Image 1: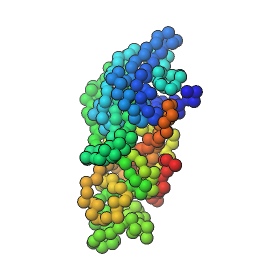
Image 2: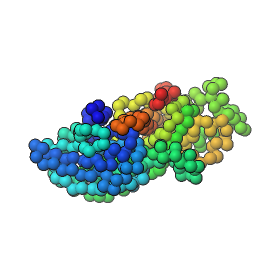
Image 3: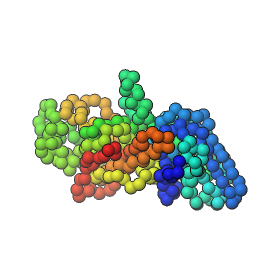
Length: 356
């Protein structure tokens, strides 16, 4: 393959690329060269050959002060399939690359250039995230769709071998309420502050059954609920599986590579949120035709940490490139952050196209 993969070598210390088929990485090697390229080390990326199963795959490499707790990594990236850790002594001229990728006749360089001499741990873990729809019994054809939607992530982390006491005391901070991976239809979804939204809709429309989709199209109800900080919306999206992330704190947000591996966000929505609100329910927009019955169902929740009344929802998309003739696919993620102050205007996400 003569065309170079799209990577982000200018975004140190996070590096990444994505491929449509993980099998081409199964024999891949992490190559370390140093001492004017005289010393050459090759390490297996996938000693257990988990990648041969064939899924969309994202490769993430990070230079960290301390490793991400393994339980946290399983929330961010999905179920851990493989884990290996190497101790390496590095020099300022050390270079990292990945070679032996099937269909690519060159090594993919990380572009790291600020390695401090010393002893490090190099951790490689492989994860697979699965849409939450698979947590309930499914028909065989549905399981085939779930398999297609699954995403494998190869996480390569480089960090000092001697952790500080603070690092040794680190504990998991991510929970299921900080990352939701699921499929959403063309209508999109809302993030609803249900304890406040349900009684407010009753006040505005009266008790009883309502089709909120029709009501939103007929008048100013949607704008009113948005302006009052009762919901955040993503209307009209490409039917796909999306990750929705809201990091538990600023430190965790700084380590989250998902919003640092692509280009600038495709788009960003700006919303209002009540100062006291910390949980939002993720409800597919098509469910709003049966209000308030839809509010009685158990929906995934996203926990919004921090303080402030401004909520931002940025859509970042990493493209899975093909090296063996398969169709290219996007890996979209919504990254939610919270800021101080109340936004002057609400700018909801509308008509989001990630697949033509």
